[in-house]
Length: 319
Image 1 (cartoon, rainbow, N blue to C red):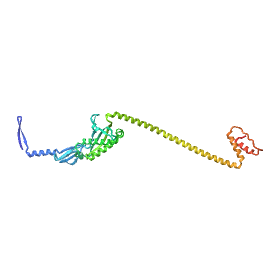
Image 2 (image 1 turned 90 degrees about the vertical axis):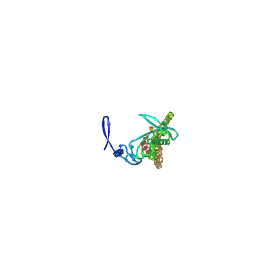
Image 3 (image 1 turned 30 degrees about the horizontal axis):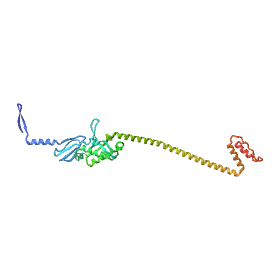
Image 4 (image 1 turned 90 degrees about the horizontal axis):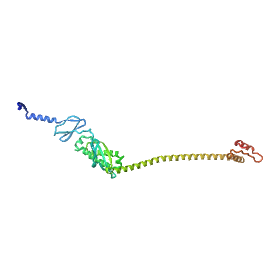
């Protein structure tokens, strides 16, 4: 091995001089070592051979042929990323509104200020790596277009009140469809509608309208409550009157039938003895209309009918 003498201070040092081939060998070894890489537990390795995808490597120590033969990218596939539409977080509990993103037109041609948060993660690392360059910007623009489309399908009352959950679900479905159409390899985890409100310039007028609607709904509810109280009560009273009338009808019919039976029985007796029956009916009637008055009966003629009168006297207490 050749050496070269070098004077350092007052000393002479011999330094070995490598030939061209040993230097090439060392350089080759160092170059090959550059292909060693580590994939984290929340990552996958997307290996490219001459710019074309060749394989996926899992977490741990891995190796690929050094650049420029092969390169590797390690996207975080388990990390949930977030983009904000209509506002930006500037600090802890501090936000800045982006009006060019947040102002949107509803289906009934009103303007609302809408803010949205989209949470997403990687479901296909190959598509995520190769099919687009700026993932966050792409998701933000697709989410903004989606929200404008969904808001435009609903009236302002729905957007401000009970329709928010429906808008969230429709936005999530449409956004996922758009991202799948362009093969972005992204899965939409959640879409959260942060705030939907009228523009600041007209918010006072909207509050007055909302207050008037609340008063209207309150009065309608009160009227409905009164209606629900009165109608069942009236129906109950009507049923009671119908039952009472039916009972009266049955009683009158039964009474009339009894009177008919009684009359028929009396008619039979009357035919057997007209005079006796007639006098008996007369005496019974007098007993009913004059219950507490002493009565004296004077028989006609020679008293031949006295026995019958005595029988009546014994039954009705007639003297």
